[in-house]
Length: 469
Ligand SMILES: *[C@@H]1O[C@H](CO)[C@@H](O)[C@H](O)[C@H]1NC(C)=O
Ligand SMILES: *[C@@H]1O[C@H](CO)[C@@H](O)[C@H](O)[C@H]1NC(C)=O
Ligand SMILES: *[C@@H]1O[C@H](CO)[C@@H](O)[C@H](O)[C@H]1NC(C)=O
Ligand SMILES: *[C@@H]1O[C@H](CO)[C@@H](O)[C@H](O)[C@H]1NC(C)=O
Ligand SMILES: *[C@@H]1O[C@H](CO)[C@@H](O)[C@H](O)[C@H]1NC(C)=O
Ligand SMILES: *[C@@H]1O[C@H](CO)[C@@H](O)[C@H](O)[C@H]1NC(C)=O
Ligand SMILES: *[C@@H]1O[C@H](CO)[C@@H](O)[C@H](O)[C@H]1NC(C)=O
Image (cartoon, rainbow, N blue to C red; front, side, top):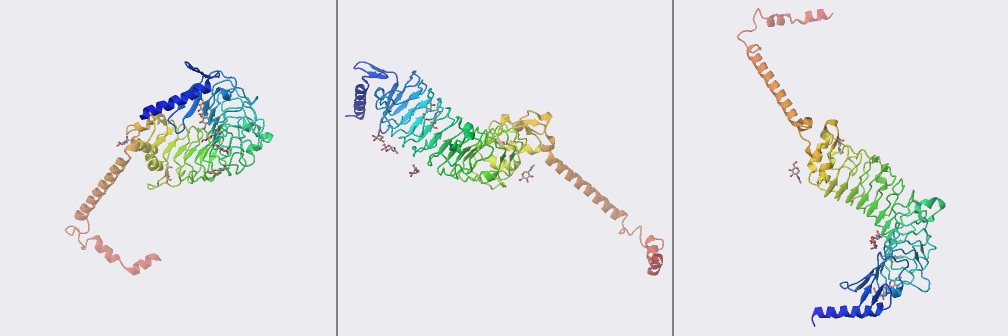
């Protein structure tokens, strides 16, 4: 038997099994002559274990499908339906073998406790973009010991039961973005007040836009595996302290006003996002000095940021080598940038300096040497002085800024001028010496009528003493 025929045989066996399984249900039905399935059903044959996938998106479901309707499905997508409640009445427990369940973009308002109790293999659960306001108690996720990814973003959660994530011992990634969690902080929501309320092993935590104003000191210290944390669009005014394992940190859109090295001591941080900081006015000296492995820095869209210190990464010399590869400095209030960054930026993969209000004087011309790594250099233009407004910095030339371009020539000319004058003076002096100086014995010797003689006679010490009296 050839490989192909073996494969066909397996395929037929699989199909025939499904004939048997789906013969009496609504979502998928098989008869000897007809295969009808509302959900797009697939077997992914090339994975080590063929994965049975059902795509039941956008078919107007109002209830969660019953086990018997989709048996043996491991990967179920029921997003974009109208499911409103997750309930397991009349023993309608969820399918045993599910590994991945996508319930996003439904109308879920309520999840009964223990709904997931019979799905020990479930690894990915997406409940995002629903209307969940609260969970009844901390037993909602019981039984999900193998869950690694939980997405609860874009719901209406304003509070979370204290131990709700405790059963999720293997959870690695939790997405709670854009819920109303911070709004009730005042009403003693313990979740963000004591130490981290999340599973200790979590590595990715997304808490953007949840209304957090502050976090208890050391809140994240117990997250010893935390690598990715996004806290953007929260009214935080300070950079919270995070565990030293952090690699990716997003604080965009917060109320942070000063960036100080004191709050950024992270030796593993690779990506730092500080975009859209409306109140950011200052980046202190050595702010990023401790970030020894930083590869990507985002500082765009902070209009109040008018300058970027030449010491943000410490003292830069020609030999300084930083792992920085990408820098995003677009649409800030920066008017100038110190040429000390020439070596650093010149070796980077990507430098974005678009739409800053550049003040075009001689100090800015070094940017022309960055032509290789600059992103969209056509958007790097002068704002001031007036006569250069909107001029591309890359196109600035001697006509626009004669002082900068001829600076060196001028010095040379001046030097030559001075030199010429000196030579002239020297010539005059030699002439003087030759024709009028004391060595010209022919005309002016020391003789009786000469002034030299009379002076020598008058040089009498006693007479000198007389006059001093
Ligand atoms: C979970 O998956 C394993 C394979 O990884 C399988 O052997 C086991 O039967 C599954 N258990 C359930 C309850 O589906
Ligand atoms: C769930 O479906 C939505 C909509 O198609 C998709 O954006 C999302 O990535 C899916 N979730 C997962 C975990 O694959
Ligand atoms: C994870 O799934 C396996 C089956 O693959 C099961 O035996 C085990 O109990 C589950 N782990 C937890 C913590 O639920
Ligand atoms: C929910 O989060 C998971 C993990 O980050 C992601 O794969 C999925 O796409 C998210 N769902 C939506 C609808 O964005
Ligand atoms: C955390 O992860 C480690 C391995 O990374 C594992 O040995 C440990 O059991 C996990 N802890 C919990 C509570 O799951
Ligand atoms: C640029 O930075 C260097 C090194 O820190 C400093 O000495 C110099 O004064 C700065 N130049 C300007 C124009 O600020
Ligand atoms: C950058 O400009 C210099 C001249 O100013 C030129 O020699 C060099 O080839 C340019 N490099 C790139 C990548 O355009």
